[in-house]
Image (tube, rainbow, N blue to C red; front, side):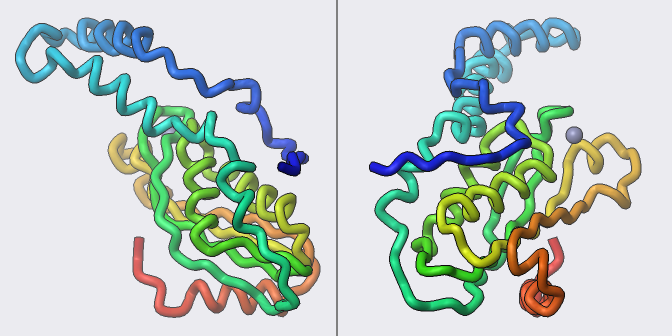
Length: 209
Ligand SMILES: [Zn+2]
């Protein structure tokens, strides 16, 4: 299996090895329950530390996901060189500043240069990066960089639209709770018409978040 190197310079979480220490999470959640003045022994809370530990293992499973294993059998050689667009890939992530969810959808486009990726792999790639402690800007870049490094396409573009619960629930700047980020490489960066074709496509018939 060919190993793929990624030259991502937003890689401040690469040192994380993805091992989740469930008993540490349980102990920490127990302390939070005590710290907010709750009674961790009452029925509804008794198993909460355990549930939260299991939840984090799932929500943060992206750290240890093996990208090469996920995509390896799904890169195909083709002659096709028109824009490929995958719209409205749903995602759920956790903001690294508050550990609260942000969620929305990802739009991906690329112009192949001899290679395409099986369509079902785009949501898998999104999940690998969403299921980490994230900021939306970095997640957007990581998805774009990954597709660039996998396919070496003529161009790749990623737009992420998301709602951030840390802004909505805490009642500050509610109007900023919705955020759009983008990352463009190659033809999408160099060529205005290409970029506009993609943005017009994802804007058409889009439902509100
Ligand atoms: Zn936040």
